[in-house]
Structure formats: structure tokens, C-alpha cells
Length: 307
Length: 110
Image (cartoon, rainbow over all chains, first blue to last red; front, side, top):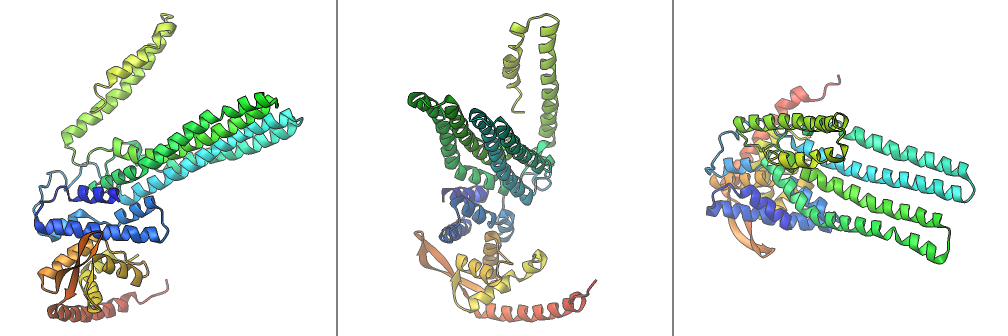
């Protein structure tokens, strides 16, 4: 619910605060809240309901035109230098990352079970059976990885400089906020599972069962924990990636040139660091100290990481 | 998919037609539009409120505070006689428009 309020606040933030605008804002907020409550009654999840309600908000520009109000228009807003990603593209990106989060997580679990099954069958006599189950499960797991990789290849626009509209930015912020709780819970579950995965190992030693059983269970439980990291990480990451790496829509040409310069500079910089590392190693034999060039290089690079 | 160009010209009469059945408020109207069009037209909040504003300015509807939702007074809208006249005008206009477009877009099999 807060998410919806925050979204409406953000959308109305640039508008003058006269009686008419305040009344419209209040009415729209009530509408959205009523719609949200109705969707929940229909059995739709909170996160999805928030998404639906926000996507049915519309364009704030339409209100600006129709309410006869003057808004400070930033000079470049009419023609953004970098064309913002379309709303559908962003929704597609979010949905795809969520899907691959699920698939990759599943793939990891399957591969882990594959390895466990090899150990298990091997311990109980059938190495051949173990190999078969390993190969089968690995095949499925790897197929999931490949499919996920391919699903993401169409999003070339976000690999380069991109920007998003104000409405979409507010939408992403509110999605991110709605998801923070789930994300935190998932991370906690993941950590707990990974820690608990050690338990079976101790238990089997205590109860004098073959260690291999403990190892198999450890792998199984740890892979479940990893699933949480991968899935929640992808969903939350999809919001933060778009928000953190976007170019501001109201960027000036000079700022954009500066940003592109520093991006190129960064690429060359890091290649030089790697080359220097190998030079120090092969030419001067100073492998023991050469590694320090990386953390130092990282610290130095923070000077321009915002540009 | 519905044509946004066309629906833009008829948002106002659409809302008026619903108000003819009785006074109503924002959410109820947007829900009726979605249900009656069987999901083919979901009106955006900004579109709805831009329409309310236009209709009020033209004197086609009036607004008054009514029941509460979540502790806030709902704004109810009521159609005026001027609004009814405008509605009939647009109804006629639509029938003529539809007739003309149907002549060309009736449905040739390619």
C-alpha cells in the first residue's frame, strides 16, 4: 500500500500544489487503493496487484495538459537524448529475469542432485547407475542454463547506455520497495539452509551411518539454499540493474559525452591493469605482490565510477 | 487491440453514458468500463481524471462529496442536462462515423 502512495507522490512531485491538483491526486490515490483491495480479494498476490495498479496509472503528462497547469519543463525533456526504453520492454525484461532466476536456480539444484546421485549410487554398488543419473540430471540442468542464457540475449539495449521514463522509474522504485521484504527473507532462508546443510554431516557421524549419506544430504540442502539466492537475487537484481545503470532521462549532451568518455576510459584502464599484472608476474617474477594491483586499481577507479 | 486514437475522442461520452444510469465515482466507473468492455478497454487513471476535468469545465457533469473510502471522502459525479445533450450529439456522431468506416472496413477476405 505504501508502494502505491509513494508512486503517486513521485508522479505528482513536480506539479504545483494547488487545490485542484491535490484533490485529483487524492482521488486517484483512493481509486488505486480501492482497485488494489479488489484485486487482493480476487486472490491476486500483493506484488502482482501493486504492479497491475501502477501500470494502470497512465501518463502524468496527460493530467498536466488537461488540468491547465504550468510545470517547470526541463529543456531537454521534450527530446531525450537517449530514447527511453519502452514500457513493454521493461516489463519483458523483468519477467524474463524472473523466469531465468527460477530456471537457473532449478538447474543448479538438478546438477547438484546429479552429483549427489553419483556419490549415492556409487556407494551402494552401482557406479554405472550413478553415471547415468549424473549425466541425465546434468543434461537437464545445463539445458536450463543454456535456455536462460538465450532468453536474455534479446536485451541488448540494456548492455549499452539506456534510459527509462519517469513513470517507469517510479514503477521500478515501487516494485523494488515491495520486494525488499521477500528479498531479505529469501537471503536469510538461503543462508540458514546453507548453514544447516552441515547438520546431516554431523548427524551421520553421531549415528554411525556412512558418511556418504551425510555428504549427499549436505549437497541437497545447500543447493536449496543456493536456489533462494539465485531466484531472489535475479528478481531483485532486475529492478536494481535498471535503476542503477540507467542514464538520467534529463541528461545534457555534455554530461552524456563525459559519461561515455569515462566508460571508455574505464575499459582501457582495466585492460591496462590486467596487462600490468601479467608484466609484473612474467617479467619481474613478482607474483607474490602483483595481485595487489587489483584492489589498488579498484580503489583508484572509484574516483570516476560516478561519472 | 482497441484504437487509442478513436477511444480518445469518445472517453467523455463513454463516461457520460455510465453516469446516465446513475451518479458514480472514479473507481466504480473505471471498473464498469473494464467489466462492460470485457477487459478490452482498461481506462488509465490519468485519462479518467483528465476526462472528469474536461467534462466539468464544459458543464456536462458536476461533482459532490459522498461516502468514504479508506477514510477519505469520495468525489461523486452527476450528469447535467447539458451533458445529456452532448451525449446525444456524440452518439449520433458515432453512428455516422461507424457507418462510414464500416463501408471500407466491413471485412474483405484477403
